[in-house]
Length: 105
Image (cartoon, rainbow, N blue to C red; front, side, top):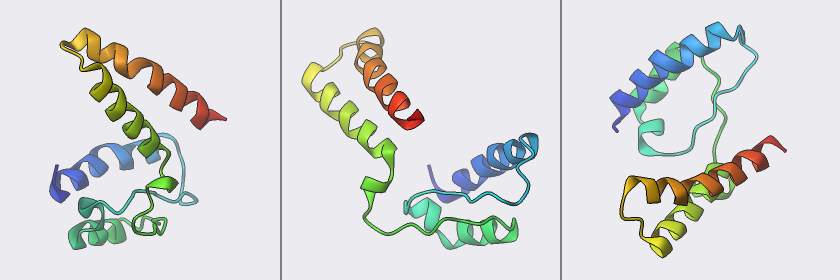
């Protein structure tokens, strides 16, 4: 994925969701420091849309709970080496459920 695709995803999903949920202007958008997120064109797009963006320190995966899930999944895949889609789904299901519950708490 590149910056242009990222901006397209935001335009097609983020903005319609904000309108549908009637969130108004009191919310803050958060993404990490991935290059497509910090690209000049992306920053300009966000500015033109008047979106408030949470400042995000560099090298801070500990602030993003999803990083814990990715790490767990990488370890499980390396350990179990799934050979087909069904095996892969088994590897993914439990850690995803655990992280989802943790995020809700």
